[in-house]
Length: 358
Image (cartoon, rainbow, N blue to C red):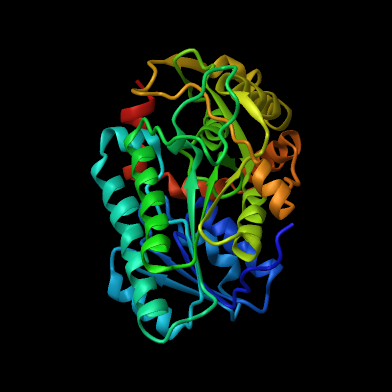
């Protein structure tokens, strides 16, 4: 196992009001109460300030409403808050949205990442050099493209073959991060994760969408034949992996973080329906709500992560089985119905109507 490479003191977390980012903030402040976190978030459709209400009272937490494209703002935060670690979650992340409107994905995911890198270089390298710093970039397994049914899972040496505007924008940002290490000497790491699930996930994604629609008696849309395969990772297991990479990961290294949980979409939906039958019997059997819809453009057939590197080098191991994680997730959405109903505002409702209820 690698020795400690970096000891963070003050973190800037971009996109910290989103799904994975907010879970990371909760995780980090619980694990490391002496370390400070500044969240920078533009609060676009998937960012929700309410995700962070529980940590507002923490004196080591600060929220800044702003855009990662504002390089001057980022520079000011790095100086004023004495930031030594950037954890970069901020991204446009929904594949369907990238198909209908790719421009925002290229702007945020590529130009936004470059804005952060420019600020980090200027403050950490061009001025009084900060010896111990780290720029950790959170990416996706979708940069690798799609897998055949019997193919080996993606490892870190797999060729990049992105198939959607979202995946292409994340692949581009991965390369830009790497270039800032090789060109300027910035201390960078990258992680590529499989499909996350858990609390605070925006209800356009598969699992919370199924839960919400089951409660409301709405159709459960399944693209194509529903046999697309994804590797599912509980969000706090992802955060534990990022934690290990920030502290113990080698500079200029990429680490794949996966859950070793390959499920077809239709099997995921069926399992969630069974759990909803237990918790919401008045709507049972919820499987009757399953509705097959036209497959989306360029839909990758299978993703799967080989996490051997992060496990063998950094000692990573998921704490949750899929069975335990999915039960926690369903219970959270049932207990926090007010939260997810509040984010399904008018603009999101119109988008949902246009893209899922045909």
